[in-house]
Image (cartoon, rainbow, N blue to C red; front, top):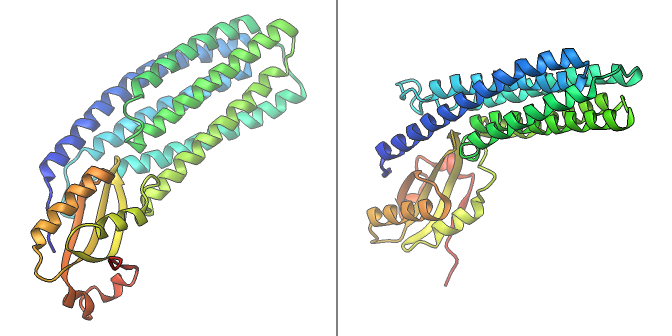
Length: 318
């Protein structure tokens, strides 16, 4: 087995990305925490459930951001003997906890909204509208701060989803305040709360699904294993590819392992280098472990007999 890539460069890049994410998360947490208090006071003063729901959601944002910061610090610890992959999946566990927290928030909002739909209380619409507008501005700024981190880190994406659904919740609170102010529709306040709850559930579902995918070592959704296998088979001096696995450790780091059957007389080192270059350029996979096998080894009942039954592909003739 030959395993070759620059571990130091990969680790350095991951460390730099986590440090940048930590700064983004800290700024977003400070913004959310400061305005959460304003919305709590404003919701109590105006009697607006939509505003209180938005404040409760923002409180979950603060908790999610703090959890994300703590998980990022744990994930940045170097690997140990027992944890040879390091602690990157601490961020995935944090994302799973964030998803569960979103579901709890949605449940509490729905229960209170149903009660208020049956007997809508009066709401000071103008005050609720103004406070929700400030919350919208704060959430928009937080989304801007987190914009560069959520696509590559599930941990940051969890926090970003919290803030995104809270942003839409602020829009719902503004809409309900405007409807009450214009038409006296007090039912709009709990209706907006139900809208917020639906957004929260949708965010939670996607986050939990992605976190479970990583923990179950599923192939990333943006990668097609059939295309990867075909690309490996298209390499010069490759007769077959089998035992292909692609998974994510955490923090967006994609790993691959595969056995490649080399043509007789070919240079295994050259094949390894070509495979690594192709995987990095075409699929953005920089952590690949490849076993180069001669034909007679692959055809024999070697040590990989059981595992290799999961798949065996050969180059098409001609």
